[in-house]
Image 1: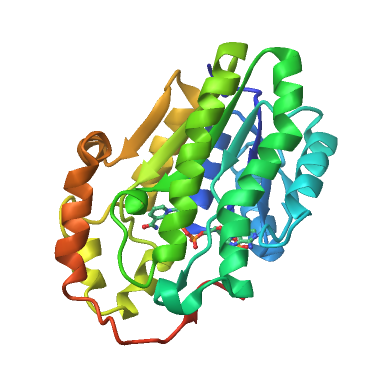
Image 2: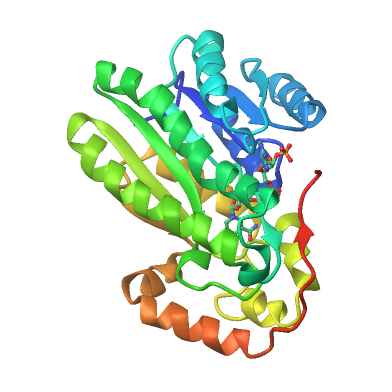
Length: 275
Ligand SMILES: NC(=O)c1ccc[n+]([C@@H]2O[C@H](COP(=O)([O-])OP(=O)(O)OC[C@H]3O[C@@H](n4cnc5c(N)ncnc54)[C@H](OP(=O)(O)O)[C@@H]3O)[C@@H](O)[C@H]2O)c1
């Protein structure tokens, strides 16, 4: 599939990786709807893409941490673009706190809403139209934290595990009917979001160990390739992560080693991003 003249709804477009994805999609001639909470960032990105010669993107602000916003966003994207050929679920939130301390606090529920329920709600809003046309692509951006969790990041890892399994189920449900569903499993990428985790004792071992920190442009290129090509299942950035995916025991061993340096008595709870 080529992305020229394809209509793409991209969430998390105001973030580091998302903005790069938007630039690369626009360079391929895609028509974009950009979403995030920070509308001024989205508007600046839209102006940049238009100035570079792309079609003016639609800017659709939404707080995906709130139930109901994703379904509204799906409807707004259809209204703005006519139809949505490609959905890229890239928005992601996190918090830091011992999993047993955080429990089901409202803020933890927001992380799950953003990382799991909202992507599923967007699919529920858009997949019926894709099935009617017999084509479409859904790219769910995930994390290798699902096989290599770290203390204090249990809610984030759980949200990514949930999305990964739901993505597998949707591959079985939608793939045979012409809608491609792909997970992009990212390793640590050097962005403000991953830097936030550096306040955690031992997180440097987890982030900086093999395969090392990736960069936002290359991560974005993997996401765009997953949307554009005929990738199935899971694609990885960097590619070497296909090994701990295939042999999750490797990922868990990596986690256990890094976790020895974590502070298991620190009961601080921190919330990331521009809350
Ligand atoms: N960086 C890494 O090491 C890494 C590794 C694995 C996976 N990932 C995943 O890759 C994706 C992009 O990460 P990044 O490093 O580019 O992070 P980032 O710069 O923090 O971007 C996160 C994006 O998600 C959006 N978002 C967060 N909470 C939201 C909410 N409640 N409603 C709507 N949008 C929300 C943010 O938009 P607003 O703030 O404007 O709302 C922002 O555009 C995320 O899903 C992340 O989990 C990242």
